[in-house]
Length: 223
Image 1 (spheres, rainbow, N blue to C red):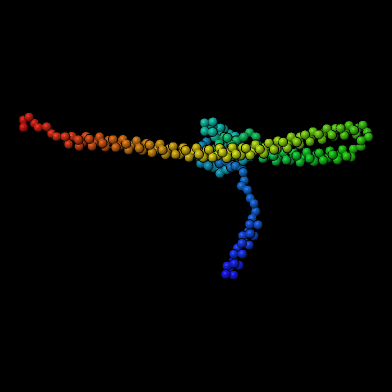
Image 2 (cartoon, one colour):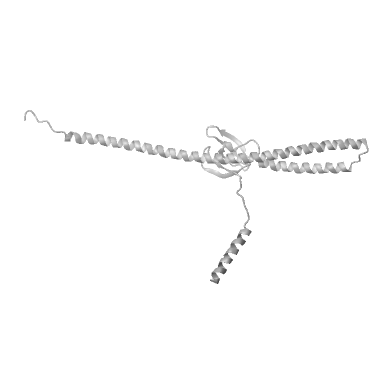
């Protein structure tokens, strides 16, 4: 009895310890687009997935199939759905550039404040410099606020675009399944027509061969 109690307490302590050690992780929201040898989902995949934000050279587009031929930085050429291509960089790439600009503007703003504090207020020349620095500082602050607003909008657009791409991938998969089911139903229908035709031919042969034998023969007048 004591051994079972000790074993149960030890197991409980081990489970609590493992739960406290476990780290939290999240699934990445990055999308990977496969690259194919032809303009359609039936063609072989030559690259298992180009990540979102990848820079590509557009070679040609097929409006009928909805696919575009592209070339990667490594020289790989292939086809992918045209709706994955956009003319501007991904929002997250723009966000990194905007963060860099924010840091540069913050540094410049800090330097301007230091210059304002060290400037003598008595001379007219100094006052002119102060006014100019204040004007530049205001412009930098306004530009900083604009970059922050654009960054927030970029994140929202990136999230909306990601959700739309995921929905489109699900719809594309459903369309492929429906196409496969439709082809199978068409094949079953053709087989059914063939069997019905064969059955009708057999019935005709049966009637032609056996019905005349089953009918009574007429007696000859000479008999």
